Amino acid sequence: MARTGHSRAFVVTIALPLLYLAGVSPDAPASLTLVQEARAVVGAPLTPVSVAGVARRTTRRVVVAESSATQASASTSATAQQQAATAQQQSATAQQQSATAQQQSATAQQQQAAASRPPGAPAIGTVVSALPAGCKPETRNGVEYQNCGGVLYRAAFQGNNLVYVVQ
Amino acid sequence: MTSTTHRHLTAAVLRCFTVGVLTTLSLVAQAQSAGIAPEAKQLLKASTDFLASQQRFTADTRNTLEIVLKSGQKIEFNSTGRQSIQRPNKLRSERTGDLVEQVFVYDGKSLTLANPKDKVYAQVAAPGTLEDMLDFARTKLDVVAPAGDLVYKNAYDILMDGVTEGIVVGKAVIEGVLCDHLAFRAPQTDWQIWIEQGAQPLPRKIVITTLDLPNAPQFSVTVTKWNLQPTLDAKTFTFTPAAGMKQIEFVQH
Image 1 (cartoon, one colour):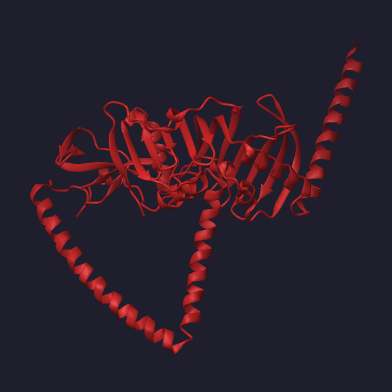
Image 2 (cartoon, one colour; image 1 turned 45 degrees about the vertical axis):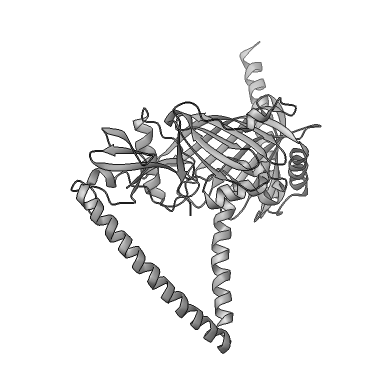
């Protein structure tokens, strides 16, 4: 689904750990713009606020390298390979089933959403760090949403940051 | 005083100053080529051990965070905070600044993150110790307690992980307190710490320079007040949502 130019500017990459800039307040528009620009620039963690935070990124890279090494050594054994292949097949079947179920569910959601969503609404699941103008709170099934011109947003914490997820 | 004498004096002062600076610089240069100076290790270990031995404390802090814009321009954001810690499993951290007003509460069973101005909070079950909770918050929720490294009982190991160089820069005064100034280098980060001299080797300031981001932005925490005998009660570590606050979810991995 196409996003409007306006909302695209506010999209926050999901893979941003260590964002410390929580609770961007609506009365600080200049700061907000700067922070959003900064997020867009680095596309990676912003200034880490702990040494462990920096170390963690190192650890992640090391873990990735180690796990590929393990896979390489396992592949030298034919038996292990066969077992792995069987397991993979089983897993693939399960994944397919799950994927089919997901598709069905997604289709249902889309159909449901398409009926009520305005044209040009941002894609479901889009994460934004600020709501568009003119939103009104709306409670559905005990959950509070923000209704912004017919598009529903739900507040959530992504790391330390308050974000809004398009429903 | 004649102007000649005055000039002589000024020149003498300048010479002393220059010699002093050069001596310091040459000491720094010597130390840099020598890996991690044992004195730097000792001073850091004494500080982290001292803090690990404190069962309850509060620290008031002043934080600065640099953000690098697309143009390369750096912008600094400021906040102040208060951290209350009771080992082994209680923490409260409050921060207020130009970008953030946030409360983080851990009661030994669950952790809560709240933005009072936005009237929202999120709560999840958390591991049973401070160290495990901080790991959980960082790895599962991407929630970070600024300078939380220092709270860990094994803070020394966390800080020194990957460090290749360390020096004692010299003496410094932070918030009126005489400190030893240490500087360390690791592959992705340079960091400095100022440790109080004397019987209570408390960290007074820490600066983290991130080397693998454009223009190497810095984060700094200055402790404006330590209290090693604070009045903390159950209320400190219990989160009670204010009227009108709504509960929201964490986006988990």
